[in-house]
Image 1: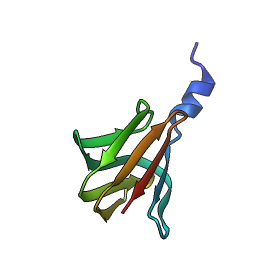
Image 2 (image 1 turned 90 degrees about the horizontal axis):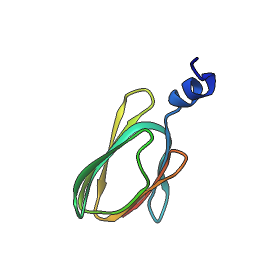
Image 3 (image 1 turned 120 degrees about the vertical axis):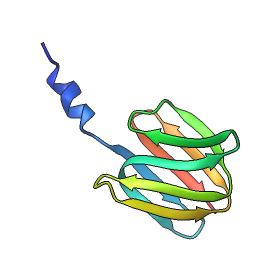
Length: 92
């Protein structure tokens, strides 16, 4: 028997918030986020394992829930993948 709740949960996108010191750059559902970190390039997808990383200079790419790509230049920052499918970035 298929669990109906798991089917509903599978349809949710991750909740992404990207903040600078001055404004909210992006807030909403996303399919993926790609950026450079101190340990290399990373792509975070739906249901990613918890993670904390340092974002390095480059371009932060967000693919939103409608598959539209958004590009943000970044000097530095932090990335936090939280339980319950939430991702937060603080960037400069």
